[in-house]
Image (cartoon, rainbow, N blue to C red):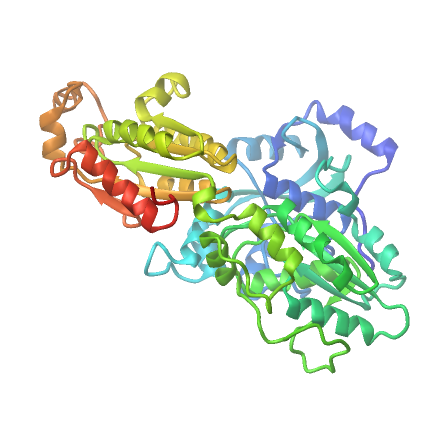
Length: 520
């Protein structure tokens, strides 16, 4: 069947807005808002709402719905237990954007909970042996993104989300089909659905398959701008790259953008891309499918995997000329210049009294003297005073404080500056979250100030360890609360063996060796 829109009529939408004032509501995350958009506009057809428990379990086990139709990933509405209970009692839930605008209403049919560990194992396999594995990063992303409580129910769209970014590309499946000339139910045109910049081999496949259609062939390029796990690229960069190669696409190519999130599941992601592309009216053009090539646009056996692409971008290397087009390379280099021209976060972690703050201050002064980039110091105590004064020292509040530091550091880094952070940051999972957050817009270097605990306690200039030993300060790192030493630090320092100047020299030398700092 042709994908159907779930957007209510103007009259029905007005009724829903009036009724929703009496119903509980949920502020959608970016991922959820993208999923809602694809539900409402038909991109997730045959889904007409959030999956119930039976469909969720069947999708995990068999990659299909309970009616036998293929579906690879669980599209579920996850939320807090409190809101789920209230919505089930009311029978309805309003779904709102970040500004409180009502985008849709769910007629609640079921409230259920899932075992997140079992869900992770079904999607990604068992936990990998190393925490640095890409699968581990994807598993952690999924866990951060999803609550165990889920709501199922039919969705009615109230109004489409407003998009200020590339609004001309935000085509619905119906609009894409109309532009392609797909009148019947079955997709018939060649297409691509890509979360990556264009590579020659896939563009060649698109041109080849579209030329096989005969006279005046049409083709679809669906740029996937929903982000996701494993270092997603900036959607604006993706769109610029695809726009830049318009001359290499088929003459009647339709360029569109869809908010499909990539979960990092490999085959399941690929299967969902195919289904969404088909709803937009196209069949995936297969590189290396054995069909005769209609054009000769360069080698067709050279391509970079997403991991290889990230390595090139991480080091500022240009793509090889036979992999992509010069216009794409230009766009990528503008966004990913050499490391010594990018924003940078140096994140120091260690016990209280380890010397982090003193080394951070000296490093900030050293870098400000020799580098044109602006330098900002985010010391733990200063951040507590100015940014997190209302927080306590529970694990939850300490994690929130570190994420706030990470957010500010990420914005400084994205703007091309240098952020130097010096909190205790005792928990590995939050440090990795901050690394991922910062790495979206620049470089991240973790420095473990590994001064032994007994040395830190002997210094105890603030008297904190004595109070912790006396039970005055609960949950104190190293005394009554654990410190998880990092295994992914780029550099480890012990200030009981190094002077402040020597420690800064070590950091500077490491930044120079890794290319993050131009030799003086």
